[in-house]
Image (cartoon, rainbow, N blue to C red; front, top):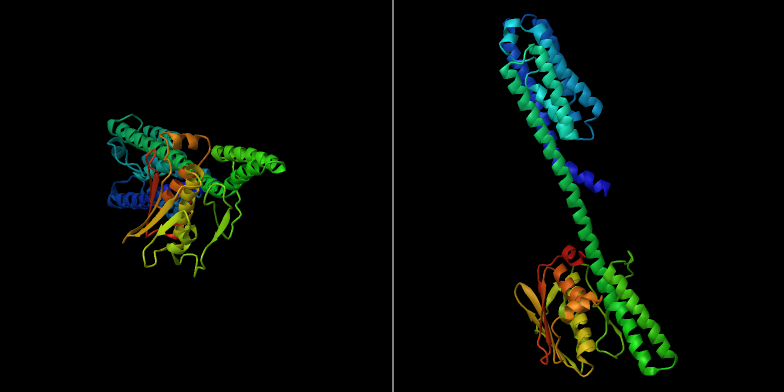
Length: 413
C-alpha cells in the first residue's frame, strides 16, 4: 500500500518539481543578467561577482536535488534557503546605499522564491510559512525600514508559497483517498468473484445433498442435515465477505440443470490459446435436453474465450434457478442471437415467475445467484443482464455481451 501511495504521489508531484527546476535556472540567469546590466552602479561589484558565482554553481549542481521529493532532503532545503538569505543580507555591502534605499532588487532577486517554493512542495504550507517568514525578516533587515514595495514583495511570496503548500497537501490527501478507494474496489470485485464461484459449485452441491438426503432418509438424512448447516454457514461467510484468498481452478464449469437431478461437469472445448475466439454454441450445447430447448444460429457465435466462459456460466446459473424455483417439471428455452456488435442469450422458462421483492430478499439472505452469478458476471464483461418476470407467466433473463470484450476485462473480478 505504501509503495502504491508513493508511486501515485510522484506521478502528481513530478510536474511541480520539474517546473521548480526550470524556475531556479531561469531566475538565476535573470539575477546574473540584471547584475551585468547594472555593474557600474554597484558599490562593491567584487562581492556581487563572488556571490553570483556561488549562486550559479549551486543552482546547476543541485538540479538533481529538486527532481523529486525523495532527493530534496531537509539538509538541502536548509542550505538552499541559507544561500538565499545570505544574498539578501549581502546586498547592502555590494550595492550602493542609494539603490538599496530606493528599493532596488536584492542580489538573489526572485531566485529566493524558488527556495521558498521547494519548502512548500516538500513539506506543505507549514514549511512554506516558516521559509517565507525568514525571507521576510531578511528583507526587512536589508532595507532597514519596512518600505511599501518591500512589504508588498514579502507578502506576495508569503501568500503564494503558503497557497501552493496547501494545494500540495490537498493533492496528497486526495491521492491517499483514491488509492484506498481503488483497493476497496479491487477487494470487492475479488469477493464477488469468489462468491460466484462458491455459489456455482459448493453451495449447489451442499443444497443437493441436503435435498437427496431428506428423500432417502436414515443416515443419509443426517448427512443431508449437516450439509444444510454447512450451506447456511457458507452463505453467511459469502455475504459477509470473509472468504479465503486462494481459489482452486477446475477443468470445467459445474452446472446443476434441475432440482433433484445429478450434478455433472460440462467440459469446455479445446482452445487454440487463452485469448482465442471460441464458439459459444459449443459451451451451451450440453444444456439442451428433454426440458431445455436450445435455438442457435447456423454459423459459429465467436467470443473471446474468457467472455464465452463467463457468459456460459451465467446461463448455467439461470438454468439452475429454473430447476430450483420453477420445479422439476418446468421447461426452459435458450435463444442465442449473434448481432454485429454483441451477443444476446435469452433464457426463458414457463414457471410461476418471481414474486415482487423476492430478489432483494434473497440477496439479503446471502443467496447471490442472480446478483452475482448472473448480473455480476455480465457487469464485469461490460454487458448487462435484464430480468423480466410476471407472476404466473414465467421468467425471462436476457444476457447481452459486447463482442469487443478483451481478456483483461473479462477476467477482472
